[in-house]
Amino acid sequence: MTHTYSVTGMSCSGCKARVEKALSSLPEVTAVIADVQKAEAVIEMSAHIPLEKLQETLNSAGLHYTLAVRESVSNNHAHTHVPKIPVKPGNGIYYCPMHCEGDKTYDKPGDCPVCGMDLVEQPRLVSQQQYTCSMHPGVIKDAPGSCPVCGMDLIPLAPDESTEDKAYKDLAQKMKIALVFTVPVFIISMSDMFHNNPLSNVLSSQQCNWIQFILTLPVVFYTGWVFFVRAWKSFITWNLNMFSLIGIGTGVAFLFSITGLLLPDTFPDAFKTAHGTVHLYFESVAVILTLVLLGQLLEARAHSQTSGAIKQLLKMTPSEAILIQNGTDKVVSINNIAVGNLLRVKPGDKIPVDGIIKEGNSTIDESMITGEPIPVDKQQGDAVRAGTINGKKSFVMEAQKVGADTLLSQIIQMVQTASRSRAPIQKLADVIATYFVPTVILIAVSTFVLWAIWGPEPAYVYGFLNAVAVLIIACPCALGLATPMSVMVGIGKGAQAGILIKNAEALELMNKVNVLITDKTGTITEGKPSVYKLIVTPGNEEHELLQKIASLNQYSEHPLAAAIMEYAKAKNISLYDVHDFESLTGKGVAGTVD
Image 1 (cartoon, rainbow, N blue to C red):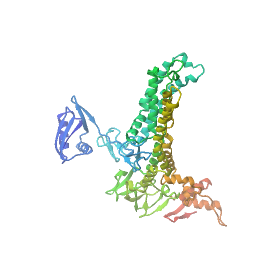
Image 2 (cartoon, one colour):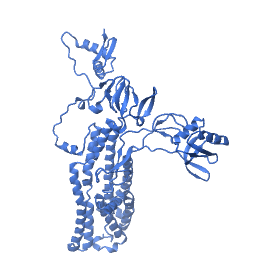
Image 3 (cartoon, rainbow, N blue to C red):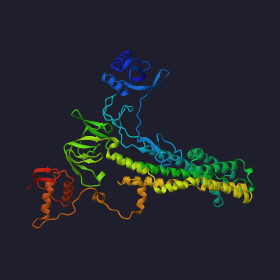
Image 4 (cartoon, rainbow, N blue to C red):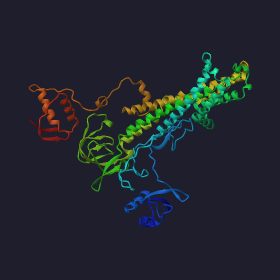
């Protein structure tokens, strides 16, 4: 196979020869032809060689040339492209928030083929931090280290915006544009209701209609066009939904208004104003599309908040770990940890993966899993969990479960699954929605027929206008959104508060709960121990006893000792010197005071 790379830095035939010699040293390379004029190197290889390996080969030979994949060549000038690995905040799996097709997922963003709603991306189960060089942003690694080009230390790469954040910002921008055009249309349309209508002194009725038409165009063909696309898809697939009614209602009203603007003589005098113009509905089209867009904006905001709750859980897992390799410590990405690796956990660090302690001992704060406020003493052979926090001692652990297999990842998976689960009441809403749209369309047609037969003249025009009114007013936005959004927001808020809800059915049943029984004090307290009261037996003085107890605990790292020291500090207790101090793991402390 042959690949062409751009080489930045070659200036003479000597540079060309050095590049060819260095790259030819690789066993996979069968031929190298460098060109100074084109600033490129054509490499023939028996097996694919990563760009990083080629760059490291040049650097090892003392050649500080930058290698990159050649994108295109034109006019003898090289256009280079340094490949950049996109940071994926999610895992590339998308699902419909309405769950129209159950648990079916998609591998790319878009609209649900059934209901037309924007697909939502699942967050990654394992947080992945990438690193880049401040001097060469094209260099991106999955683990910290040095830049293969210049040797500088790599710095953490800020993650890109999530899909939900981008969707929200896009909708927010469209909402601003829609308001800019919709508000003037609404004001012009309502001006007839003002006393003496100040606009009539400046603009004629026909001019006002043309202005409304022009201002409505961006709302219909830009900010609200997606709703017509979704409506069209719903009729093609015959999966009728709320966008079906929105598309028909606003579309017909818009076409009616254009006809009334351009061909007013086709309408009877009963539909005309005193100025001879037809009553148009541009403001109805613009306002309805803007209100639906507002609903989509609020929905995207809710998705972003729920996704943010899951991301807060992801932050409990560190992005790096200290790997013990050949007797030396090496900082690696958490994604590079394999089962059986030995990891060093320093005081105050988060446990990177699930495993057991091989050397040393410490106290571990496991409140994020157990709810218990007091850290647990851990000895050699004891299990430790990812996301829990080490105390004030260092130890060596062996990785046993990594990535999506850790307990924390399973908790995050449970939250994701719960947010996608369907509440029993949602089944009723789905059944109603199935018949609702065809029923509304049938009522609209019936309205037109009844007005055409028994309505006053002009009967057909009256029938047409009332049929359009039925389609617009009957839009079931709340029916389709209320239950799924309630489930998503409820479970997301629960996750933020540390409450994990198993599924939507459990959330619905909570409405019937009137008694809460808890067996863990840590779930209803501050989450850390404190001294409530000191009880002194006869013959002892409280001040003196507290002074001795606090003096002995001043050298202990145990959380109970910290609570005693806080209590003594509040009482302004002075401390004694302590001799022969000893910490007895799991039993307490001992020493000589005074």
